[in-house]
Image 1: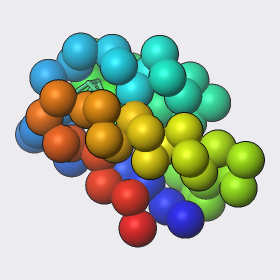
Image 2: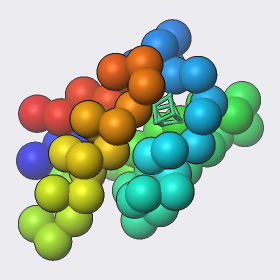
Image 3: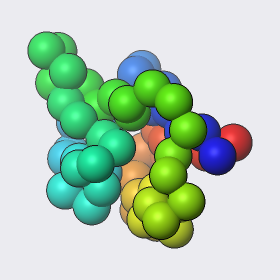
Image 4: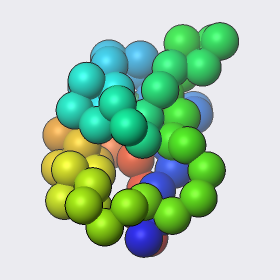
Length: 62
Ligand code: SF4
């Protein structure tokens, strides 16, 4: 499973970085980004939850 943030949609609320700091971080522009590579299996549910909780639906899971 992979995930990414659509930067134009992110409103920098910090929900995803609080929920799954192993995957999401704020970049220098204060926009969330996902670390590259596959999401570890033990974090897949957390990442799906972050995608659901993102207020601007900026997190894509594939
Ligand atoms: Fe951006 Fe969504 Fe993460 Fe909030 S939850 S920081 S809007 S990607």
